[in-house]
Image (cartoon, rainbow, N blue to C red; front, side, top):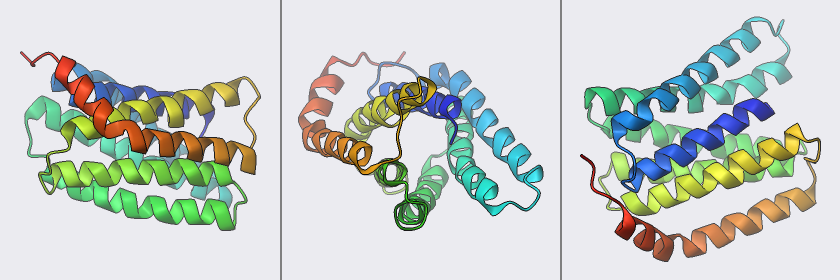
Length: 202
């Protein structure tokens, strides 16, 4: 995933997290969902069509569809009031696929930071599954994790890439894993505190 694309993944995860925490309405978050979703459907389509059979390019583009279609679906659900269960079950599919991408990046691609990012996204999308498909009462917790992952897995890596500081080595993977662990440990009390400050939607 390119640095610019990753930057906007961070933006939309943050916005959708804030939405789940009750600070933004579903319709208020729809424009960015449609924009990021549209870009992340168009971009991999272009890359695959022009790849000339290069499987490394196709592999790099394939995962973008999982995110792109998620954001478009979120936008449609929020604007049209559709039931979220379909998106929830799709999120389970994404979570399982994320495990595969993480395993490949760690064992074959020799890119441990990317593997950690995929694991973190897999955890978040599994939470979307629990929230939307199984109606688990984890809306605030999921919002907190989404907002934090927007920063940790989107904004920070993207800025490091754009500035030329990002390195696909074990040190970066360890740093990401530590941040993820801290996030998972603190998300329950943090989600309660943030959700308590949330304003009711109009």
